[in-house]
Amino acid sequence: MPPIHVLVADDEPHIGRIIKTKLEQGPFTVTLAYDGMDAVETLEQDASVQLVILDLMMPRMGGIAVLDRMRADARWSALPCLILTAAGQDHQEVEARQHGANDFMTKPFSPKRLLARVAALAGVAEPHD
Image (cartoon, rainbow, N blue to C red; front, side, top):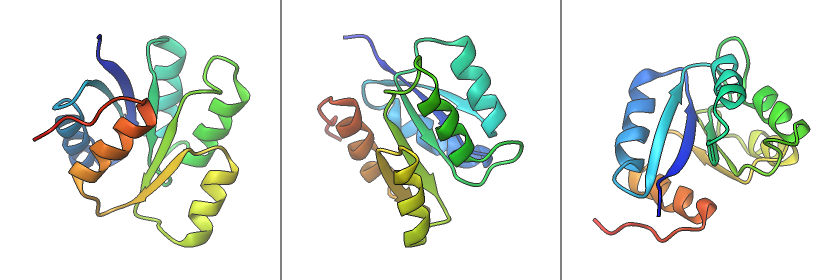
């Protein structure tokens, strides 16, 4: 089975690297974007993206705006999306889900738990450590 292509958009490069390292221990390949506009540009240019992880608060375009663009575009409307953010108040999770997020996690996060949640969203078995 070919790896599942995950787009990770987070303006903190070290967070992106942690996510990439952990997910690539499983059946995933990861592309990193460092703001919302980069995420949309990646979606525009790379039709192989199968799942998206978004931070809420990013420069140039926040996660909710990216999510709205995804859900409004037939090419991306069905892509699973997990929000991973330091903004973890209940109303932010509710808002993210109202805009079409499939899952929501807060920072700081457990990389192992993130891998499990992404595997579940992708419909694949979680790799064993």
